[in-house]
Each structure stands twice: as C-alpha cells, then as structure tokens.
Length: 150
Image (cartoon, rainbow, N blue to C red; front, top):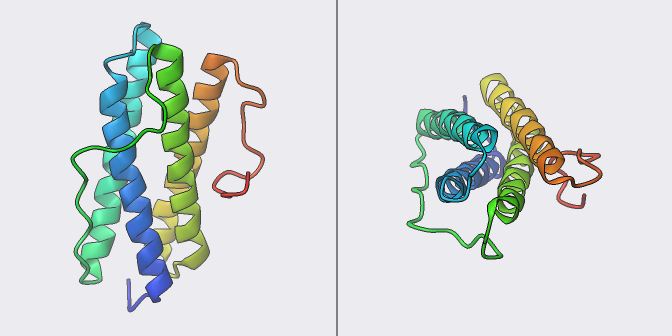
C-alpha cells in the first residue's frame, strides 16, 4: 500500500473499529446462544471477524499507522434478553461492518486492501442475511449492503 489518501486511511480505521465492536458483540452473544446452530454460527462469525480485524490492523501498520485499539465495552443499543433479541444486536453489528468495509471499497486504491474490504463486506452481508432468516425478518437481505441509507 503506497501513500493512501487520508479518507482511505480513515475508512480503514472505521472498518477496524466496527470489527472490534462486532467481536465484542459476538462475545456477548455467546451468553444468549441457546441452540447449537446459533452457537456454532456465533463462533464462526467470531473467527471471521478476528481474521478481518487482523487484516485491517496489518494494512494500517504497512502504511505506518497505529491501529485503533478495541474499547473495553460497546453500546449495543438495546439490552438483549434472549436469543432472538441478541441475534438482532448481531444484525446491527454486521450492518455496521458492512458500512465500514463499503467505505473502504469506495476510498482505497490498494488492491490488497480492496480485496480485504470486499471480503469484509460480503461476509458481513451474508451473516446478516442468515441472522435475519433465523429470526424471521423480511426482507432477509439488504438491497445494497453497506449503504448507510438502506
């Protein structure tokens, strides 16, 4: 990655912060995951978010930036009370990741960073869709993943 535009760096930092928040949310979700398939999906999501977090941190370090650290806790909006309400919190976390990674796609020029962003956007959109199906939300898929207006 060579001398990226400031907006590309900021977008990558924002995507990383969304990944940190998603990881924290996945940790919280383990307390509410009752069904084996939900628990398994949370663990799979955690592994994918860790991979994307690590990729974003590496990309920032390659350009001489210090990656932002994870916060000790995050505001998840509403207090989850059961598995379904926790899944809705996970949908929000995945949506935030989609917005972050789409912003990276819109601003980054480096091919490797763009590939990471496309991976982040598509995996977050896929997970959000699966979570929506799990709780019976319709439509299950967002028409424009990562668009903050949708």
